[in-house]
Image (cartoon, rainbow, N blue to C red):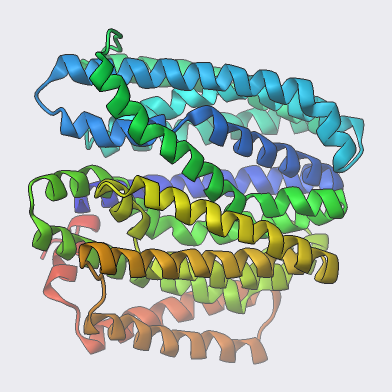
Length: 482
């Protein structure tokens, strides 16, 4: 787990930097209105992918480890997942292409959005197969190749966006360049999968295999749609009720807040297959220990950037242009919502990997519907700040529900008194970072405040005493020995 997290943290750091540069180029090159068109189109593509995916990526994480030693069955799972995901992608792409004018009329009303949506539709089946290959590497606990693949796509996209903007392309030209980038990325992913693994997708699954596969994947598809209702429907509703500029400002705040999930995402790369194996073998104590450590480590590593994003919202947003600084309150609300994600750790994966996929489905859809209701009520009253408030409340609710369910059903709880140390160190760092606001402003505050907060946070952890298990972790993540 630590090996996978260390590789992923480094790789995801590069990935986040690439995505940051992509959004920086887009915001600076397109402005708030055209960036809003891009953001809305990208969001609708994400929603469409939730339908196209059909839960196949999670099925690979479940069944490839479960069939360990049975290569024929593993190849059939991979073949079934690939075919299902590709056909789902084609159907979703056709629907998005046909409905693009209708979506445009219901939202921003600009013909540019229709063109953007139809270009994004081309990406759907390609992206489905890329994610199948990512899940294969993840299920095999080969994080190094997953990291390579995760970084190849944004690197190619960054190059494509840069070239398009350099030649003066509008948002349509930029998205067309991104489509070309996805095609190149798929070729690279395919080459990596065939050269680094001996897996070869086949069909011929038995009726029992089909029932087992779809009994797991289809509920997760419906569940993933509920997740999208929680996490992406807000941008769609901002586009429906407000302007392209509002979508652009809102989206950049959402993108920035997602960076706070890096530590949890890193540890979650190998958590599902390991958790599935431990649970299947009846090793509950080991599973709870792993669950507890992942949660505390994720919280500790995410706390400092969370403080920075909450205390320096306007300074962070101003990097993308002065118009984006209006999203300060939105970013603060998103930060609070994402903090609850980190605090409960990989609770959602615990439910899925212990066979409670139907409960996950109910969770996601119940809170997804609540998110729609809250967004409607709050957007009409408070604008895009209301959308952020609705989404933050929904994130908090789903995370409270998950942690209670894991404890009640499986008697697993990821907390201990060891959490008090990073909390105390965070309070000290936050006080210093806030105090610097009285003497600095703008970009200098961002740099000096961030550095000072990091020094105080690390010093606080050292003074309070670093746990032995943490020393082992950091000795692996950072090549410093010990």
